[in-house]
Image (cartoon, rainbow, N blue to C red; front, side):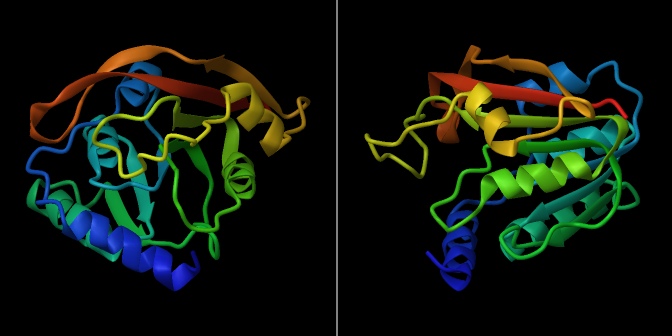
Length: 208
């Protein structure tokens, strides 16, 4: 899938869903970030914007990016209507072509899976290099397929957190892996449907 097709696909995914009235943050984000001092955050693949809005509510200044203009416009409108537009900057980016500028104390990438051609390892490597000293990169991937997922391919394979870390190939003298595990949880999908899912969690900290 080329870049133009990827934009069409993700705009279609978001346009087919009603705008979320109360976007919710991902559980792995809240458990990781709670207690950290707010700073500058980058949300890669912001989707409905639950993570960006929650971070802004905690005092973070967030740059939220997505390939879908529909997602970005909805997030910008929601942030403005809730008085968070001074803390949330929503920008459209195709990460296969461009990466946001700046330095950050937190970069999060939740479920950055796509059917398009995307060098995820290169994107996550750029994310790690965008961290300030002491900053963290949180990567949360699917470890199982939820019933409501757009990808129901029974042959899909989700790399382990250790494999993701190996693919990013960061210098251990500068970055350290603080967490790499595969916890399970009960997730809630569209219409209130629930299912047990597995998350693949990787947390990397820049030490220098």
